[in-house]
Amino acid sequence: MSQIDPTSWSALLEHARSIDFFERPEPVLARPGDRIIHLRLTVDGRSRELAINDPYETPDLARLVSLVRRALNDRQVVTPETMSDEMIARLVASMPNTEELRTGRWSWEQD
Picture 1 (spheres, one colour):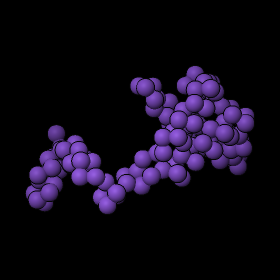
Picture 2 (picture 1 turned 30 degrees about the horizontal axis):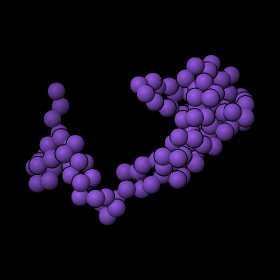
Picture 3 (picture 1 turned 135 degrees about the horizontal axis):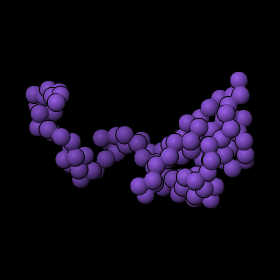
Picture 4 (picture 1 turned 30 degrees about the vertical axis):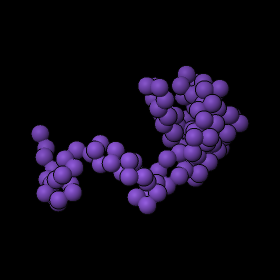
């Protein structure tokens, strides 16, 4: 499990809003040899996936990709050793059938 550093996340969201990420038109079709980066952001109930061509069409899109990479590279890795007892308890409580998972008596039921 990992968490994105709040400072990196704030910078990413601020830039996404400043370039109208959720409203901007789709980029032009990629040319042969272009890399395509698929970026999905979900913020405040709004979600959008944008296919961004590399080389980038605008410096704004290049900065957006850079901020995403920074946020993912700077994320904080959370392990049981770094979690408080309260955090572990909340995680376990959020899982379905925690007793079955804990004791190994668990089966996948399909409807």
